[in-house]
Amino acid sequence: MFLTPSLLIHAVIFALGIWWCMEILPRWRDDIRKLREPDDSADRAVIIILWSITAVVAFLCIRFGLSIGISIVDGVRDLLH
Image (cartoon, rainbow, N blue to C red; front, side):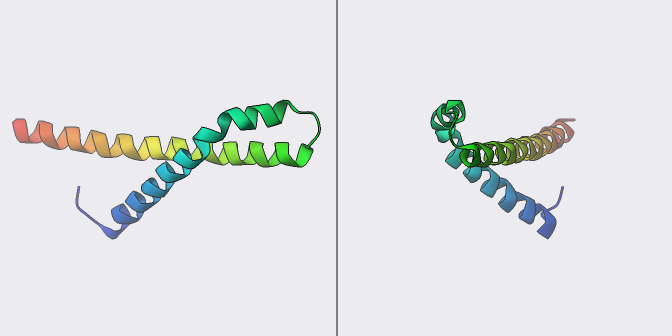
């Protein structure tokens, strides 16, 4: 695997995704409390949209991290054999 502009862009997006998740995850208790309140349907919609985006971002970050990890393990395995 070579260092390409595409890989650098993916790395920046990965870092932004990690930052996004670190900003959103501490809010989960307050968001669950707000979802249980029957009043604000607009707040509920925003919370559901934000957590849906966070789930997609987390999935993509995990997938990218695993692909990099697998590439590293394959490279080390090739070096050892």
